[in-house]
Length: 444
Ligand SMILES: *Cc1c(COP(=O)(O)O)cnc(C)c1O
Image (cartoon, rainbow, N blue to C red; front, side, top):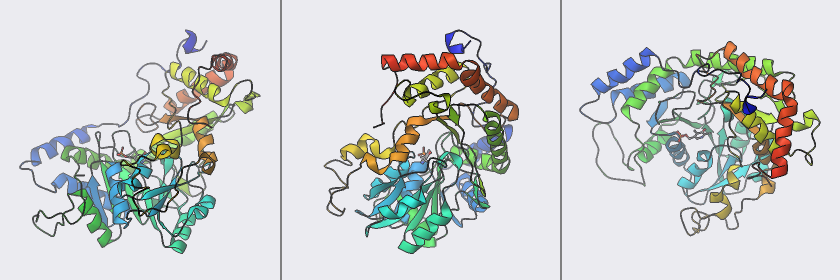
């Protein structure tokens, strides 16, 4: 019997370890930073050590630690020279910050549809969105899988665009042997507690190969000031913010980074084991990994496919089936969520285009007039949002110490829900459909 209706859950309490995985060396690192961190001055040793370690890991010569991935993205967009009214291409399905970083520079995000196999930018759709105002592409390594950088770089080079990598979900992943964080001309990563490289609290990393971009990003990081050698002159050159990272968060992330290669290996193996164990379970489609790429499964995305069970939309809508599966799987003790119920351009910020107020930056005089965010421009992203459920993150982590045994438990849940108890789940979905008790928001 489904746990939802009183059966025994497949996954016992405490069987899945949460993320991040904290060990004694992390505790020692944080306590060490605590002892070294007074008097306050900038930058602190623990921050410089984190920056040096990310530079070493990615091979990017210039790194700045920031207090969030959102801040690091804003620094990257500004460092790329994006100015008011410029257009930046962004995938339609990602986290808000991949697009709002463009608004933070008073520039205009233009969305590009994504690919239903990889969840990443569809290079075939990029070029048709380029105008004479386009200055950059933000490529996102969604779920932990790198975007298609070879075709993207070719397009970026041909049109003279900066290629900004949002590596917030993909630390430790690789694209033909090169590490996430080094796949664009510049990059931003998040160290938020849930991410594959975690600061436990909040944090971010900006990286570039260019000394001038490094200088510009540092101005944004710290009050618009220039920091030549020793001391500050307290003279803001441009609009700047306070994006400095907390020293204890930096020390924790530095310690975790020492284990990132090992942790990424476990994530890859766990993802592959889960995909193998889900083969033959109908009604869900596991993620695919293109040749030459590695996936670190920040999220393990599943697309529901009730068609595979012979269910028609008129009988059981995809959205009702998705919600029934979500409820049943959660009740079995496996955390699964509906991440991003709608594409980014379908969010109110873009639909109403109020921006900073009075429609800025779209109406501030520098932008091309007539920007609108239309659903027909991102049908695949809508389809993904309608069908997607995700495992991973901190609640059903594919990271260590969870192992292939844990993945077998995860797969057992789907066997139970979609094979053994399929009739009960279909009846639940039909009930949700009949009562209109499912979530059809964000879908057109
Ligand atoms: C988490 C995330 C961000 C933002 O990072 P924060 O550290 O939470 O500000 C940006 N882009 C993507 C794709 C993310 O997943």
